Structure formats: structure tokens, C-alpha cells
Image 1: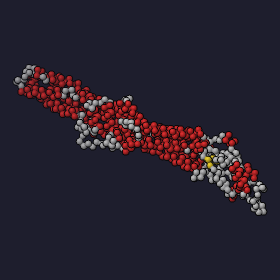
Image 2: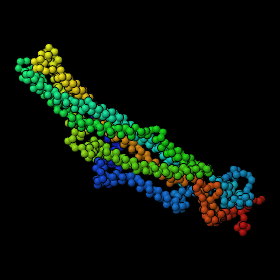
Image 3: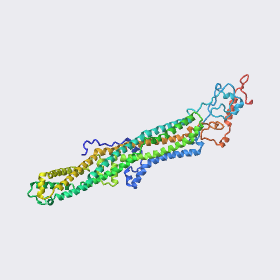
Image 4: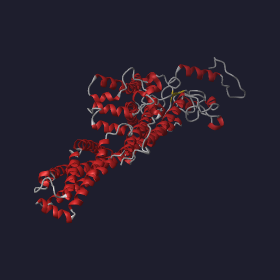
Length: 596
């Protein structure tokens, strides 16, 4: 009845490389990695395991927390920390003028030159120099030079944003997809196991246990009817009837066989039914929980939207700043909505990275206990059964271990399987006895000889035969449902595939993706000045010129008042340039210093 010959259902456990990698990667600092201790309750061993497990998550939280604290300290220090405080990048006004032909043929008069002296934004035509000199210089091109700190920072900023978009997509396509595969595998196999357990417990209850009482009552009546005193009341020894003697011997055989059935394996069947009840309840709960999980629908994929759109919006802001495109409303939107939300998104990624680090530790500890290559989740399942109170000698533990070992241990259903031949022997004996009773030519004469009616005995024997037939069919059905070829694939699919293949892949993909999102998100927050327009350094210009300030960058009035609109170094430069200019006239002569 049991398909244990071909062993096509047997599957060897192959641990994914990610499990052993995590075992070597995640430090425990001497703490235990025995996951079964958490099933023992609040003990010192379980506390030790939890401490070692959360250590990696705490390290991740601590690193990003220190990073965030440094950024807040830089913000409090202010502009002295430069772009690290969130202030705009500063630019030196190199070569600030156009060529004469580009500027125009009409010279700038002194009044216009002085009006604009020292107060021009990036791209202006004069910085306190003479009009002739102004026409021989260049205005800087739009944006920062390629080899400059702002350009490097914006390149890193844009690269980080692209990385965030890429790994957000990978987290969905790889992490959530594998996780959904794990959920689907658990759900599908739990549905099969639920139906299997329901069939087994129904057959045991209705086809065997419910008939046990009836069979026991009929057996008791048959034993009384077939006893020497009652079988033939007129002649208990049946001295003068050869047919009666033969029939009496058959009756003794039937009684003996019925007595051998004892309690119809009540204890074994009850244990098996209890095991099926437990499996049914557990699989029913899994079905209810896993059936509602869909990580690939639009509600789950919505996580991809903010981690794609917000970095893209920030890339656009960085490009605007790179090309000196003033977009005040867009910068306001980025500053007061996109950036705060992105900071919260980065915080969520940090929390998920820490949580997934803990989940990865649990997964690897369960699937690869001790980090040994020859270990499997089977070892932990057996240990958990012992902790939950299942003694190794109990029937339930033997049945569980039989399937866990893929039917390579002592068969706990051996006695139950032998119950089938016993029932078959009883059925054959009852058939022969009934056939003899129904031989009308002889049974009528025996009825007269024994002075009794054998009709009631015939009815009882027919009822007993029907019960034995049902018991045989029910037993065959139970053993067919419980065969290794049905149960083991369900176990290996759930434990090996869902629990130790799809699940580790999903956990590790989500962990690395969220960790990368958190890291590059923090880089973008650190380089948030890349989204601001570069301003002229106050050391070279009298003040921050109007029109060049970027969003969320306001200059204190006290700072403006303290800045000299015509610093000494620029005045000296102006005087030197004027002295070097030729005086227009009939000839080119350089004036003396006294003339100035």
C-alpha cells in the first residue's frame, strides 16, 4: 500500500550559498546561534541567542545614527562647514568678461562702470575695472567648471540617485518576487496538506473509530451466540450432526479471530487522528494568513514609486543647479516637500536594513544549524519537537521523524499496516461461515436438530462482515493518504524550497537593497547642496549678488553689512589695472602715478 520503493520523492537538502555566507559574515561575538533556544521560553540561553542575533542590526543602526548626528552637528555649525551644512557651493569669479567683439562696439562709460562696480552676479560684465579692460575679458560660461568641487559633488549625487532607483527596482523584482514565491509555495502545499489531513482524520473517525463501538457490540453478541451452550441448545456437543460439528469449529475460528482484533487499534488510530487534527489546524491557519498575502499586486509595488520618483526629481534639481537654471518654485517644492520625504524614506530603509539583517540571521540559523555544511533544517525540527514535549518514544514523534527522515527510519505505521491482513483473514472466515449458514439444505436440518433459529446469527454475521469490509477499505485509504510519496514532497517543498531557498534569497535581496538605499540615500542627504545654485564667494565679491542665491539659503543682514562693497584687494587690483591702461589720444602714453 505504501509507495516506499522507488524513493522518487526523496530530496537531498542543498543549502544556498547565501546561508553559509551570512553565517560567516554576521558576527555573533561569542553568543549562541542555536535558534531552538527561543522555543524554550525566557531562559538565559534564549536571551543569549537574541543578543547575538540583534547585534548586526544594532551595528547598522549605530553607523547610520552617527552619520545623521554628524550631519545635524554640521547644520548647527552653519556655513563654516561649507556644503556639509547644507549651504550652497561657492565659486570664484574667474575670467568674468566677454570678448570686446562679443560685448559690443560702444565703450562703457565710467558712470555705468562704477554703478556696477563690485556688485555683479555671476555672468556680469564688470567688477570695478575700467571699461576698456572690461571689454578685453570674458564672462564665465553658465554652470561650474567640470573640475570643481560642486561638479564632483553633483556627479556623486546623481550617481547615488541612480543607484537608489536601480536597487529599489531590484528589491521589488528580486526580493519581493522571491518572497512571493516562498509565500505561494507555503500556501499551495499547506492547502494540499490541509486536504490530506482532513481526509485522513475523516476516514479514521467515520470509517474506523465510529464503527469500533458497533463492531465491539456485535462481536460480543456473536461470541455469546457462538458459544457451546448457545450454538446448539438441544445438543451442546452436537454428537449426532457432522455438519453441526464442522460449523461449530468454524464458529470457534471466527470468535478467535474477532478476539484478536481486540480494540481495533483504537490507541494507534487515535494518535494518528490527533496528529492529523494538529496538522489540519496548523495548515488551516497558514492558509488563512498566506492566502491574503500578495506581494506583487499594485498595493505592494507602490513601494517602488517613491524610491523611483523622488530620486528622479532630485536629479532634475541637481541638473538645474549644475547649469545655473533658477527655478524658484521647483526649488521650493524640492526643499520643503521632496527632501523631507526622502529623508523619511531613507530612515525607513535604515530600519528595514536592520530588520532584514536580523531576519537573515534567523533564516540562516534555522536552515543551517551550526553553520555546518552537512546540517539541515531537519535537525532543528526534531529539536523543536523535543522542546515542545514530544518524547522520542511517542507515536507522534516517531511518525514525524519518519517523514522528516524521508522514510529512512523505523516505520511507526508497521503495526497499523499489519492490521490490514488481520482484517482480511477475519473477512474470509466470516464469508465462509456465512456461506455455510446460508446452505439451506443443511442449516434447516441443523435448526431442527438444535431447536433454535439461526436467522438472527446470520444477520449478525452479515453485519460484522460489512463492518470488517468498511474497516479494510478505510485502512487502505488511510495508509494510501499517509504514504511517503504524498507527505514528503509537501514537507520538502515547504522546508527546503520555501523556507530555505526562496526565503533566504528574498531576505538577502531585501537586506542588501535596503542597505544600499540607506547608504546612498544618506550620501544624497549629505550632498543636498548639489541641488542648490552655486553662489559667488563673498571673499571675491562685495556680497552675495541678487539672483544667485539658491533655495533655503538666506544671508543674514548683519553678514551683508559687514562686507565691504569694494574690498581692498579688489580696489588695489582696479588701481593696478588702470595704471597699466594706455591713455587714448594722438598716441599711446602711459601716465605717471602723479597724473593719477
